[in-house]
Image 1 (tube, rainbow, N blue to C red):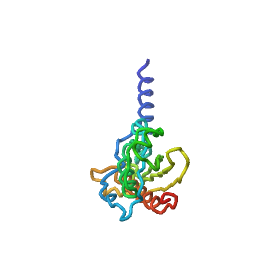
Image 2 (cartoon, helix red, strand yellow; image 1 turned 180 degrees about the horizontal axis):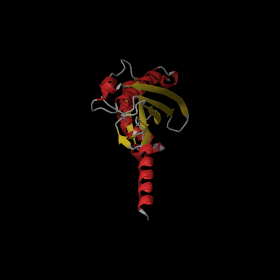
Image 3 (cartoon, rainbow, N blue to C red; image 1 turned 60 degrees about the vertical axis):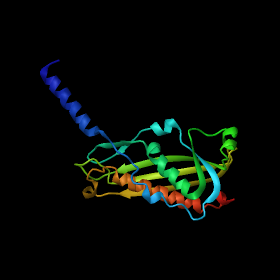
Image 4 (tube, helix red, strand yellow; image 1 turned 90 degrees about the horizontal axis):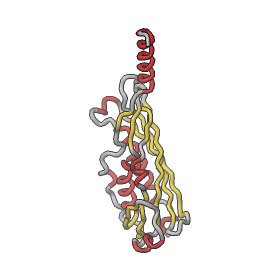
Length: 198
């Protein structure tokens, strides 16, 4: 290959790399202390929280600033916050790696099975820095009885914003605020759901 062609190829590759940006790892769950506030009258039922290993390992990539992206594992990061939220609402919560069969549901005395679904979006107006300044977490919790019959389905969206001056070393701050907002909204939705009190 001629030198001129090599230079043009290298330049083109550089432009593509610049435009495509890179993905920076962040954590979208932070300090969970705000979630440790059990209801004075929790619902007297035991629920199973289903998050599979495939979901825990699922990585999501969304936009950051400067043409870059951020990468994170939403189910891995939200498992503890969701567990704490459910623990605030119900008498007991059992973590499950898969939807339980009848024998498992009976042995663990499960009244409800909770299966979360998580979607996220992020953005930043900055052309120079990569952490997202705005983040949204949509959390849907489908609640069934042990036979699979739908009891209720709750959907909430949490939003988080962080200014550049706040980031310091916590580059996932906007995401962590969105997660906290979503989980607190889900806790309120669960507590107010008449179907779960029957």
